[in-house]
Image (tube, rainbow, N blue to C red; front, side):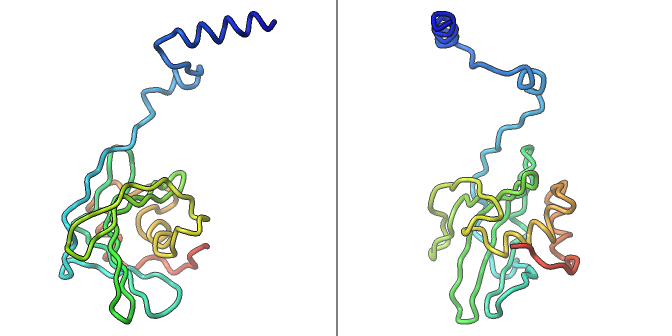
Length: 170
């Protein structure tokens, strides 16, 4: 038995094709790799649209609709701007995968209007690093009923109308 397992392992190692299950072979054409998405232009204050995020007062969130995109990979990408009442702010280029609901940070905005940092891992909504704003974007704007908006126009329209009144799950 050990010899048979060794031979099977040796044959697999010699193959130049990765091992695939029957399901993978049957559904290979349905699998979509994540698009490579370079950061969009840096957001302009005049383009920002406020996002309704329930939670503590003193922090406002905005999306620049000109940066919205929905890739072939069904990831909704956007630039999120957060500002405190004291004037401090954060700018980030991010993505949401609606099914499964996951969030990814692609780049941070720098004070000189450029992008920096490397793309982070996909994170679940339960992650400590995933903010209420990201959950609000998924639930109220970009992932209605678990499905992504179809395109940037639909995403922008969702931002411009008030989201349904509901509690954003932690």
